[in-house]
Length: 345
Ligand code: FUC
Image 1 (cartoon, rainbow, N blue to C red):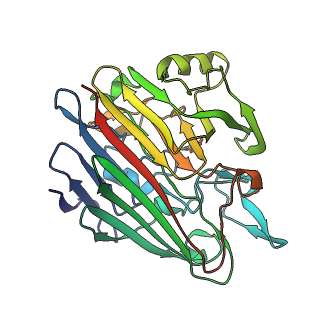
Image 2: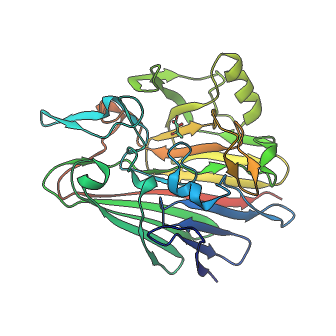
């Protein structure tokens, strides 16, 4: 039996900051905020029945309002990832988007989904955030009606569904994702110890020095980036660091709808991530500031968790082979991401 509770958090804001918790009553529950449509916790048992939040989360709720760096659990849109020069061409017209990382646009700009206040309604097994976003709000063309729902579906599966409906006469872009960072340890300071990861992909998107997709794919078979075979995450992280990278921050071209499986060697927790799109950005939280306090009051540190962000491959707006993220006038699209949780005995 699913129960939904609603709590007003003690933060001074014009719009009350609300936390919604959707509890299955069997050790599985999640919580969300009306700012950023953020998933702030996802709780599950381990093999001994101890429950923990498997997401990295800000300790102070205020940080969910102000953050423009880490995006813990946030909804991301209109477009996840980076858009070169924050611009694209449509029918020979140059369309400029808000630039928030040098000349480029990252995660929908500073006024993207992650920073907005959403209307909320309760569903039978979850909640739905809705908002009509116009160009004056986020700097993208066209009025877009967005809904983002989080619901428990069959088994212990959390489904996140994004719908965008273009309600104007001009085209826009729609490639939303969710920016959850996972850590299956009870003690988040243990970092990624004991984590095994698999990703069904033989190629990643080549990135330039500003992490902008060049349009090429790189064959990663038998390199440290290859997670086709389930691999120890810390060992792979060490290998890529030895080759000069700060960690993983790469778009994988996935070959299956089960885009990643992350599990813990000892405590039995396992998450399978399902998606209906061709890309997965794998980010190992490479740069952090210790003034950020997370979860039970610990300082944030590098590689404390991993973000696994399903989306159409970044760069699609400039490289048609990567997919189509244009939402034409009047069009409506829905994308789903499912977190399937289970515990190995
Ligand atoms: C991922 C990365 C970025 C960024 C962000 C928080 O999407 O690709 O580099 O740091 O998350």
